[in-house]
Image: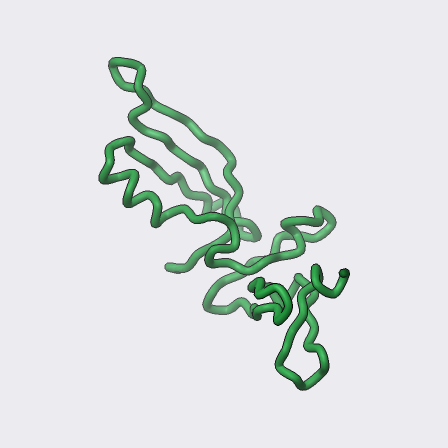
Amino acid sequence: YDSWQIGTVLQITHETGNNDNIVTTKILIHYDGWADRWNKWIIINHNYADIVSSRFKIRELHTHTPYHSYLTDPSYEACEWSAYEGRSTKCHTCSRKCCMECYYILEIPKGSGKYQCKSCLDK
């Protein structure tokens, strides 16, 4: 799939050049909710062109993916979410994009098309 996924960094390694400058950084990513066979190394060469292109491989959490309960509550299992198959919607109160499978989002009032997320409901 060519979609954004939530991942956990498992390992970071650096390789240095002749003058002990870091020339390559390797980051091992495990995609949450997916089997280990989907783990991926992201390699960043520390030249300007590669650093600029690497910005398109890694983004801050929730830039393209919804909030999930397992990210803040370890009693939940990771949700296998896909932009193509996952159901998410925005909270009418805080505008967070939330997973409708695990983040406890309710339509309030029912039939209104306006949803509130777990965090806003708890306030």
